[in-house]
Image 1 (cartoon, rainbow, N blue to C red):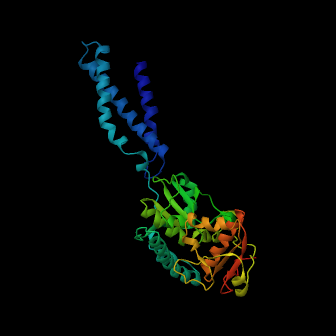
Image 2: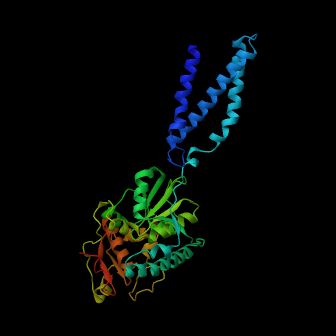
Image 3: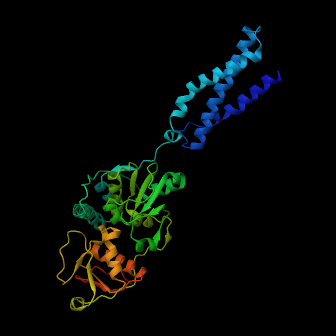
Length: 363
């Protein structure tokens, strides 16, 4: 009698998780999945043991129990292993709902922008960025990238995922160092967009987690995710509207959402021409060169970190004059100035040929 009571209590104790915990498709939890599997196994083994015991006691009383129970138990364990193997063949994570974003054309994502100017600017700029990346990759003899629809998350959706399933996400911030110094959200790694354009990838980038690529407006994030997809990473996505949209919705950030920097020296055209400086035009790939003697072309946004090293090296001994004539180039010029100064280099100033683009970017 005590043995039967003990077996019954054990059955109730170990089988209870199978009934108390909802299926994985209702509550996506690895721990709950493991408990459920243990419950199923315990029910099977305990039931098999009781059934075998009753059968042997009724139909084989002439046999000595100790000689028969152990072989039977071994056989039952072997058979149960075959019977339960499908439960363990699939990884527990495969029973959990995979993280999925919205799979939309980039144009559809951009058209959600409420501000018409921003919407029009992004629709124009994203295709310019595709062309700039193509020119850069062609110059570096890299293969063509077949752009495709990429999964993405709204700021609110990403915040909820970070709270509930943050360990299944890998946040990759591909903004420039100056941008990252201003404000950020939780991230796992930082990396330059220009390196991704050149198929240079972060170390230890996981393939078993959803990679979410962050930038300021969402465009570099979309493009960066394209290069990761091209490199063989299946689970890639980006933040719709970038961190600009995140901050506009009042979601938490570390730091201050303000890109204004201390105004650099802004020489006139005559002063820029006369300066004894290392002169670098940082406008996007494909931009027409400005008519300044000894001007070095360096499309900063799509330049790799290795491409930047000559400028950083020269800046230690000779001032660098940044020149630009497009808004994107002037903004990236401020990023380059910040980088030079952080590494102890000298900056002669920033010459904006239009005289307009730096407004709103400097204090």
